[in-house]
Length: 237
Image 1 (spheres, rainbow, N blue to C red):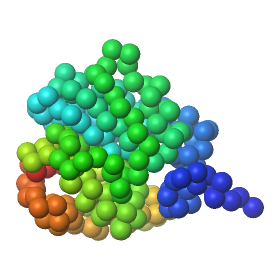
Image 2 (image 1 turned 180 degrees about the vertical axis):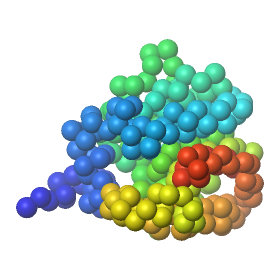
Image 3 (image 1 turned 90 degrees about the horizontal axis):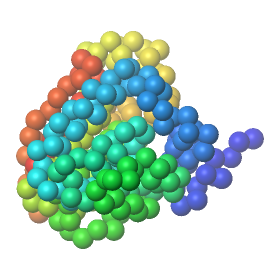
Image 4 (image 1 turned 60 degrees about the vertical axis):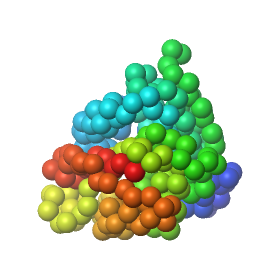
């Protein structure tokens, strides 16, 4: 009988139990970090989502940037090469993810500092970063872990700093993939915390986390992609 506990190695229980095959197993890490696979998973929208994140990021001046968890694809090298990146901090709770990301960092990039850290307890001082990027992480976290990660994100974001989030859009039952039960059930099977995220109020969660840190947060624009199934949202502290 398969035992997912063999993948714990410092990873949270929910990650090892539900996502070992995608993020902790060497074969899975190799397989999923290919652009055709990523693009297929995102229904052909990967490049559009990435381009929108980088378009919004490009206006951040002289940014000391935090990427909150590794992401398959070319986000990390794009941030490392960006003209306005002064220093990129990349964290993940899984060592295998950090090793995979390190292999993709261009030799001529800006300084990239990698650290094995859980997003729920960031080992950085308050107000450390000019910009923070969260790329398809929140829907993979249980509700309590998501709330704590957002609280920590806003703690380390400087006043005036930018927060960019690429994620699934809210499920209001309008998109075909929300209404088509077989597709929705498959997604929810593969992503056990997605249904909760789909029906959560991200703006309200972030506003509460900002208040908890003595800050105010302004919604600074949102781009809906693939008919609103995905979104890129920008906030300013």
